[in-house]
Length: 512
Image (cartoon, rainbow, N blue to C red):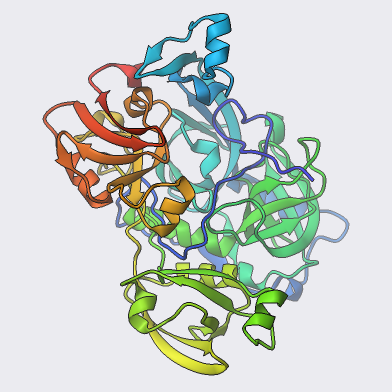
């Protein structure tokens, strides 16, 4: 079975419904972008189980469609033409043998080829969640977009701004300047059951709003590689362009945000995935109120209890999460957790597996104290854990504005578009960073940024900024805030060793 890639705002938008993002095994915090606001969305919630509803469907879905259709919008995104590293366009363009045969027609910057990417357009869907213009969609729909247009069911087309994004769940919140919009009603997605009838509403292939029917085929799916996954599976047809659209129940309530498909053909084959409404609400509320998503952190590496592991640890069942590593000085270490412990109960709830525990921890605010039952050497031990917040990924020089949207024109710092994180055990292992190397790990680089043109890429380690040593992500953030010059000297470690690059942000790249 083939797993499809992202349906985003760039060149792949018309072909895929969702995609792959690498995930780690640590339970950690995640950050999002761009907004600071005191606004709280007063969403409507109806938490009755679907099976308890006396459905008015009868022989027609029309009454439900009429209720839901105005809340689902088309999202059209445009990415301006720009120079990008050649390797981002095709792996062949950065191959020395390729350049030797055809000649270096792509130009060179800091030893890496670049090529002119034409303007890109893509489309997806979104769901209106408040009367004053907040809209939920997928991160991969709006990622990299310079212009976002939203087409309403009544024919209006409005310009939208990104309020915040959370790549770890592939969710984004955008906003249009409008009032009295038809907001969707949420349901409690924890009460959804396999067999419940559902409708998928969106804009497949850009042909116009389309409704498909089916049922909930499975729950708790985690097959796409996102950091936080708890997908609802459905056989309602989801196709390219449906990303960000609504999955609703037999009463027209939002069950989830359509995100992904599994397919051999590129179209629907009856296996679609939606982000549960409860998870979407949690992420949305944090993005709107604080501009970032903060998740709980235990400081452990955990794994499922397989039959072989259960035998080795003398466990009677396969339920629980096995602690493979405890991060020194982390919340778990301070509470006394040890390698080889099996977490069986957390915050009063049974732990079924590692993914379940990771999701549970993520919903708890840092600072909260939570009891946990741990099986250690055949004995049950109770520990009190104080949930922490991982020094996670930061975005350098993001330039927040009062209206909650970030603009390159407002940035007061440098290294715009570069995400950094601390070098922990997992990061060193994932990117093969030697123990002797110190600095801030580059976790993401905007392909349109000057940093990308200078050669920075994920997996690099920033060791110095303008001759000042960088010990961690905090140092990198501070050294790029409110700088006098838009030219930044960066000492970088990569797999080829340490070297210096100059990131020049004085040009007009952003206006191209």
